[in-house]
Image (tube, rainbow, N blue to C red; front, side, top):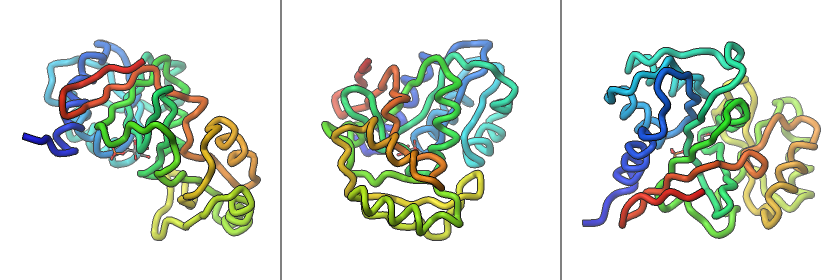
Length: 220
Ligand code: 5RP
């Protein structure tokens, strides 16, 4: 029987437990795949010291399972960060930010020695760019940034009714040429008023746990 996307997310989340180090703080991202991971971790007998997280939703879920939270400023390094992705390619570059948490996610990823990406097969792509790139912007610079993005070939759309963790706005940008993801990540971030964008070309995953209909594959 064909497994649903949620079944596959659960499968990736369960596999990820094998990579959780005991008696350490870990980093935990945001999204429905990560929610399954937090649930699996909470129900497992793995003993971790606690987690640095990247959104209120993940914090709430950690609290629900009695997993202690620690602030990013209280750690100098984390051995591992677990998070999902909207798209991931074969070199483990990603598009993230579907949940608008890519800034906090990039910060925690960079604090971590290893980034483990959990994904169902629909996220694995040969070429990044179908999923819009989330660009977090300072509200007063929104229109100015949008015009610069149009000049780069993108089509920005304001995420209505959404504020990021830091009170900023998100432009979801389709149509960008992501054939050189690192270049586009840098070009977007160089626009004054952009806080961070959801291209993870510099901060690639170290390991992808890819749940597919025929089983879980580990891709490095
Ligand atoms: C949030 C993210 C998520 O990791 C990404 O959107 C994937 O979410 P999901 O696991 O719900 O498919 O980057 O900002």
